[in-house]
Length: 480
Image 1 (cartoon, rainbow, N blue to C red):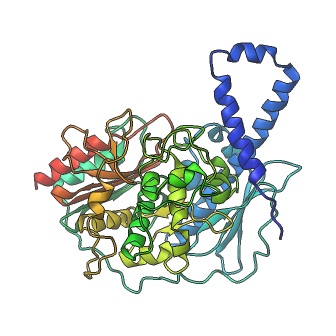
Image 2 (image 1 turned 45 degrees about the vertical axis):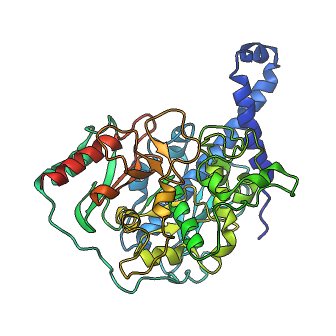
Image 3 (image 1 turned 180 degrees about the vertical axis):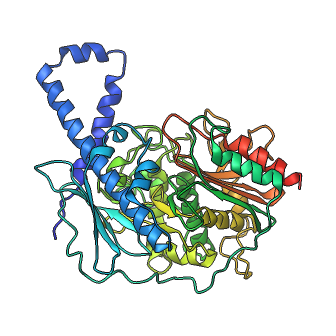
């Protein structure tokens, strides 16, 4: 099967973002008035068609990953559940589009999902997301690509790095105050009007002391981590540094030649969101990659400089993607699945673009307990319970040191792939966090030996007050 190149779509999306930004300037009304009405209508029609194609990709990938990876973990999700949670309250314009798009879930004779197809246009193929196995999860195919082959071919193999033992952390009966705090988060609006909590896991002193789940979710239910994956990416960079395969102060390999000023960008700049590269929106929505079927190479690595590397904080998916690309050659011998297996993160899968590039800025699926295990690794200084060191000495200090430019607004600082809660009143100043879209939080408090995981599917326009929740959890633990 030959698949069309997506460089046109990726560049078109970037160009459209720049055009929309320009039209938002003070001169926009005059420019619009001068433009022919037919041209405006043509552009609006093109935008609407593109938005529909991306929405179909969003739906195909989300259904594929949510259902297939839940089944991988030995639990179940239904399309109705995914529509209620993952596909409800999402970003505009997709939220208004995904619900009515018809879909088919195609399974192999074994019952395992082969792919999901979402119809979006009469004159184009459906949007497809295919399941590539327990180590790879699902990938979105490009807009215009045909069905992903014969669904009857053999099921993907079991994980290469499958855990042989439960490797479960010890549990302790939660204190009443902690139970009340967890149930309050699950029950409603106490930490944010409209927020929807799906899972909470609390560790203290290396022991799981509390957990709770919304109806339809359990300890084996994976959810998309969104930008918590950026902290996972930073951890994988740390593992490569520990093996001697990477250097955060080395160039990241960006730019076309030695004369290209982007050659000055280091892995450290990228982890600290300080590359100085342009991005078309805050956080730079990476729809062509996440849901359009473009690749990491096409959309994340070629953005130009607008500031000197290391001088400006600009939160951007593309910086994390470039940092991961810089260590990409190490994944052949040491894939993320191997790292997750060592940590006992049995329910975690890092997904790829359709050409095999890891989308470690967002597209990782993990259970709440798996994220707690990642937090415990940081509490333990990068050393496994077996005594094996898998992160360099001093890595915790490195990722939590705000040595780069800092976010100009908000109450959180930034280290290297992790957010810092050092500006939050009532929260220990050493607390740091992995934070993702729709309310994904992993909070690590070294001075208290505590890990707090909150998973959610918060609608756009709502939010979860993780600082208040952290204060309440710590108070409940202190009251035991």
